[in-house]
Picture (cartoon, rainbow, N blue to C red):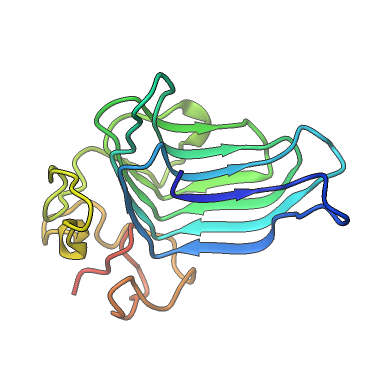
Length: 185
């Protein structure tokens, strides 16, 4: 896993996920590039999680389990928002999520058709046109510039506004922001 939020039991006070923003990340090569999961107990709540403006490229695994680009699977959720993310996944699962009205997916860019329960009318499906999405994954050899949107990317000006003021690189977001961690200038 790379970015994971998870409720934990068996502590004096259960460690719970509440008020977490996962924004402006560049993630590649993890078993789950971003994953939210929790206990099956209905009394442990995962709430107020924003997953926005991330660029996730090709989750990978070294064993028999499937890699997943974006995973949201927990049993007791409230106000989980997954918006304005670029998810490029050439193999394995592009996304996995519980079907829950408390989990809102909107305005994401998918490299291929995702499961129905993670789609929205504001989504785009196809080549996100990143500067270099087909790089060889070498530890210490990944360049953040590879995750930038090219000028002809379909992710430009397609995001929900107001989620974060800056992109990964410190550029200001515009009124109609781009999808992903990079705001094209």
